[in-house]
Length: 307
Ligand code: SF4
Ligand code: SF4
Ligand code: SF4
Image 1 (cartoon, protein in one colour):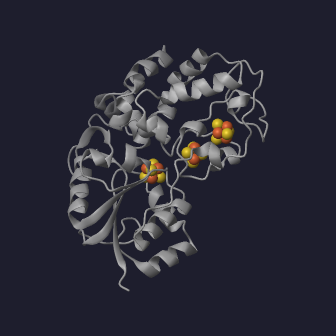
Image 2 (tube, rainbow, N blue to C red):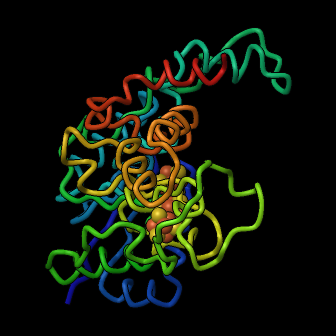
């Protein structure tokens, strides 16, 4: 049987998604029995865009060069898979929407004590877009695999499904589905941060007054954070109900749930999420789906945090 040609392209991202491919370990060898990787930046040296049955895009659109590369991939690949939360939603660079491009350039170059440049480089570097964008804002995308990065378990299932010509067996479960902590009613009256005192290992963070995004986050990670003692910050991207229902938002989802199981006022939880919105909204902020929600207030929330 001839192997399925698969091509990768790395746009504006951190390369953690490529590491997730390697992190399949011996399962990668099983994939390579059926797949020929014809292009994979970071892990192999290949110029040009060979024809492929599947194109896998990591990273989001942050520069004009990213747009050029994405179109080359769309032309050379039968199907495109948006791989990782950067590609699907824009990724953590979305927190840049809390500032103007000029402010970001100032912070990176003109007022940065380590670079101390009086100018922003514009020669030999691709031009920045106004903000990061998900890849489906530019081309048609056939498959989506969010996660930051997606867990190798899901990467293997996605590639196996492509090889076998079937749909991947991915459910709509959120991170709580994989977390053993018990969500119980408590008399906790105040929010607190994870470093402010010892936490109970078997009790849900929300029950203990600590924000955790697990119940509003799609499981594409197997919940490594809450099972190892850290609350979820939502890096895999929002759960399906938050994405698909216009009136649902991360603040209200978490605040409704947390205020029901504790004695913390709902308004206090909403306000805390607004003040830390660069963390909780960053991953999907660049998605048009999210900018139709109250996230357009992000700059107002951030300026409130500074005052
Ligand atoms: S999704 Fe996460 S791991 Fe992948 S490129 Fe973006 S920031 Fe890196
Ligand atoms: S909210 Fe967080 S700690 Fe609580 S069950 Fe869900 S993932 Fe676990
Ligand atoms: S922050 Fe949440 S979504 Fe991201 S890896 Fe941890 S548990 Fe998963």
